[in-house]
Image (cartoon, rainbow, N blue to C red):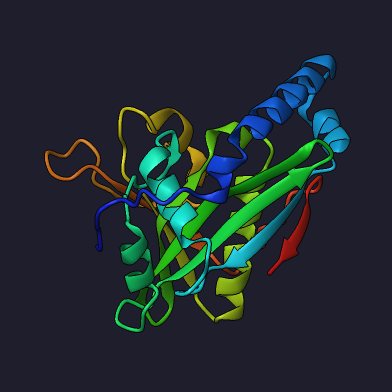
Length: 220
């Protein structure tokens, strides 16, 4: 794996942070006033845009920043620098990466999720990094991002998608069951065996993985 030093770049999300907190308070008030999550999502008019990340993409600083800060929904807690992200997107490493941004009737969330694929053979991809901002969990955006990657993998004639989970004290509650609950089967279990703790799950790409019903999904 590739690692590096974190960046101190001030991202657009940093500049908008005060406004975003105010918008999130309004969302919480709406959520408490409704009976269930589906009603909440219908009222939100949630829309996401999923970008495939390029080596020269201007969002790379934000992705690196998220890796340094995100602990709860973070499958492997790998902390790549801006230079590390760009290196992994080079032909030497040949990673593919996607970022997701979201907006709803109350405002713009900015970029709030990231997934990176490591090619592990002609017919297999492994999710080497997958994280989401905790402020948007429970709205299905993580499933929309995963659905996009599964769709691209299928179109690329990949046979299996493997998802890696490396447990930490902070990520277990949100991440431990995510892959099994989304159609992945346990493939390798090396948790609690005295060595490196990790699990690898696999998804058969012959199976359909639908986009969430109550989110409008765009691609860029």
